[in-house]
Amino acid sequence: MNNNTIIKIEGLSKHYLLNKNKTSKSDTLYGNIIEGLKNIKNITQKKETQDFWALKDVSFEIQQGDRVGIIGRNGAGKSTLLKILSRITPPTKGKIEYSGRMAALLEVGTGFHGDLSGRENIYLNGSILGMTKHEIDRKFDEIVSFAEIEKFLDTPVKRYSSGMYVRLAFAVAANLESDILIVDEVLAVGDAAFQKKCLGKMNEVSKADGRTILFVSHNMGQVASLCNTGILLNNGRVEEQGSINSIINRYYNENSLNATVLFNFEDNSLKDLYVKSISICNQLNLATINFAHNEPIIINIEVKTNNILNDVILGVIVYDSSEKRIFTTQLPITDKVKRTESTIFKLKIPDTFLIPNSYHFTIGIHIPNIQVIDELLNIGKFDVFDNGSEFYKYQNSDVGVVFSNCNWSF
Image 1 (cartoon, helix red, strand yellow):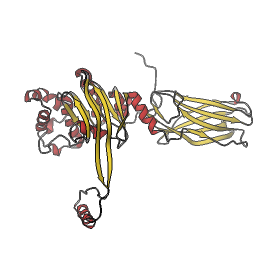
Image 2 (cartoon, helix red, strand yellow; image 1 turned 180 degrees about the vertical axis):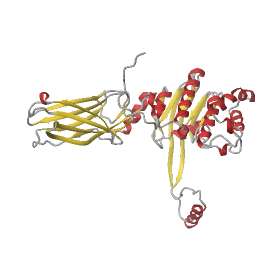
Image 3 (cartoon, helix red, strand yellow; image 1 turned 45 degrees about the vertical axis):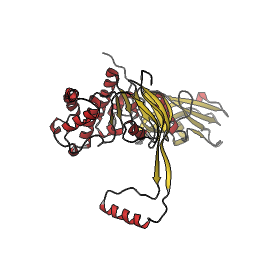
Image 4 (cartoon, one colour; image 1 turned 90 degrees about the horizontal axis):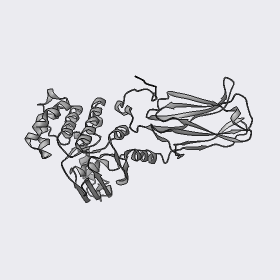
């Protein structure tokens, strides 16, 4: 490894042999009895097995001080990768090199002894990281203050709620002096205020102390806000490593490959005007239904004209996933169309306007209060994802339906 490389992975693979005859183990007495009877019945049956590679030939390098978002769909291999890096599970093959101390916050319940108190677990975790008692003493008050569990410090952690457990686990992992901090989806257990506090702490220790962060979350607003680089995993392989914004954009756009982004309709000579085609594109004119909150959404509407009418309006109504009407926009088009020809109208929804959500839209051609000439109900849909706005801090809170770019002065 060079001087700036803190983690280097070469050809990392993890193989599992799945037993297709085996059912998952039950956690009830009744379920265990039934499972035992099934095993007796099937004892003479030949077991069928299936190879499964959770990771396959993964290679990458991470530089000291990088804040790395590891992104991928469920089953992509994210958690397996972090468990191997944390030495919870061994790789099937491949090589891992890293320098310095590593602290990991993965599943709730990992790393603490349930019968020990919060106080005792702080010292236990510090010892595992290779810290001396003096080093842990120096950080102790800071850990307890951050976790906000002073009253329960001498209570066995098996009596903690999941939220208390995560608060203490994160406080220990973030405040003890490790060089690499690995955080999986576990932060989703905490409340919004604590999530914000954790992200701020990770930013602080990375920028001030040069600590390297590996972060997994399905909240792309959190990922974009914290991380400067990213790794995209798909079916156990690295698809791309690069800037976090490019990784997030690729993740969403790959998930929309099978989505309908282009509509073509049959000619209709019975209507004076009608919608002939629709396409949904980004600012690079690439068809997609996934947009970052800070990029414009372009809807191209082709209108075919059989007869010219007066006072004709082309309108679009956008709704969110709760069927709430977000906005209506319309354009007089009588003087913009020609008989027997097609005209393409480009609607551009500005960037940083719609908050992250799923949306659908209706298109209509009409003469106000007189005639509906053509109408396409719920004809198209698109999604807006958070690419690092301030609103990720208020996940699961009602922040309205649009970003309001008002003029402020002081």
